[in-house]
Amino acid sequence: MHIGRRGARSLLIGAAVLAWLVLAWLTTAPDEPSSFGALVAVVPYMAIALVMALRSRSRAPAVALWLAVAALVWWQWPQIRSRFEWIYLIQHVGAFSLLALGFARTLAAGAEPLITRMARLTHEDPLPPALARYTRGATLAWTLFFSAMCASSLLLFFLGQMAAWSLLVTLLTPALTVAMFVAEYLVRLLVLPNDIRPGLVDSVRAVLRNRNGATPPAF
Image 1 (cartoon, rainbow, N blue to C red):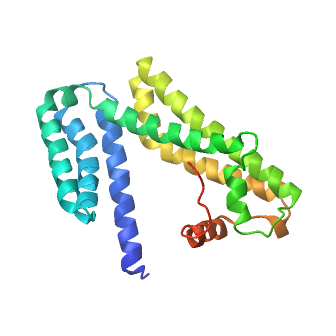
Image 2 (image 1 turned 180 degrees about the vertical axis):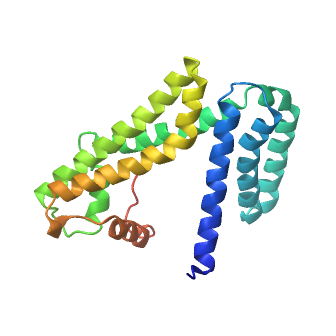
């Protein structure tokens, strides 16, 4: 079966990400200092940052900043080697707390829920009442999911349950996120009539079409 260059590239990226997650799990679970574990934690982020710096319009300042960070990492390497799991904690908690706040703030009085806003891109105003209720509930559900992920990560980490924490932030996080998407889709099938049910692909396409026109979702 011919999958094409784009498909092969996607498979390669997916395999690389999966390999990195497995290595992150194997190196953080023992809760021991590790030069290899520190490299697994630091190198991907530094590589991504370098690519972004090289592609920046202000390339020279961006590369200079990258070099300064690299020098700081080199200087602080003994500390990073001994506590490299903090890199994963900051990344995990930071990402999920920002997502939780971004979704939660759209549930405030007078605000439009984020998923309602996305649905509006594929439906004419006014939204059907059933769809408006559903999208508000879905926004709340995702807010609770992101908050639970953040709280679980902090709780396991500071209780010293490093094996469980490592499993959560590496292998379980993508699995649970996919499971949440599937669960939300199944609920959508059950509670919404077909004629007003927003499709995931259509919603993504609408957001991409409107990213330079309509006001984007606020985070």
